[in-house]
Length: 121
Image (cartoon, rainbow, N blue to C red):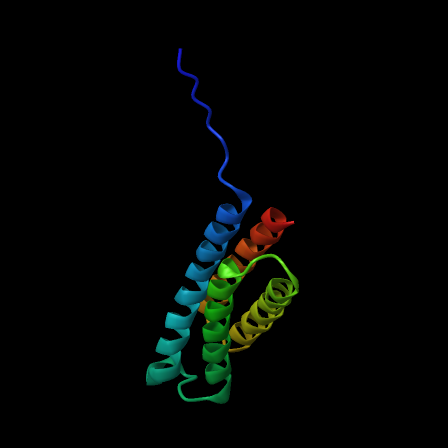
C-alpha cells in the first residue's frame, strides 16, 4: 500500500508567495498613481502630492519584491517595517489626494503585509 502525505510547503516558500501577492496591490497602486500623475483630468496632474504618491508606490513595489527574496534577518526586518511605514504614509497621501484606487490598493497591500508578518514569525 502506498502512503501519500500532503505536507504544507516550507515556510520560506509561503513567505515568498505572500510577498509576491503583496507586490500585486503595490503594482496596481503604482499604475493608478501614474495615470493620475500624467492625466490632466485627474485634478492632481503634475503636483508634488501626486509625485509623492507615485514615488511611494514605486518604492513599495521594489520593497515588496525585495522582502520576498531576502532571508530572515535584520535587513528583511528593516524592509518589513519600512513597508508598513511607507504603506501607511502612501495611503494617507492618497486619501488627501482623493485617489480612491491608490488608497484601496495600499490598504490591500497592508492587509497582505499583516499576513506576511503572521506567516514569517
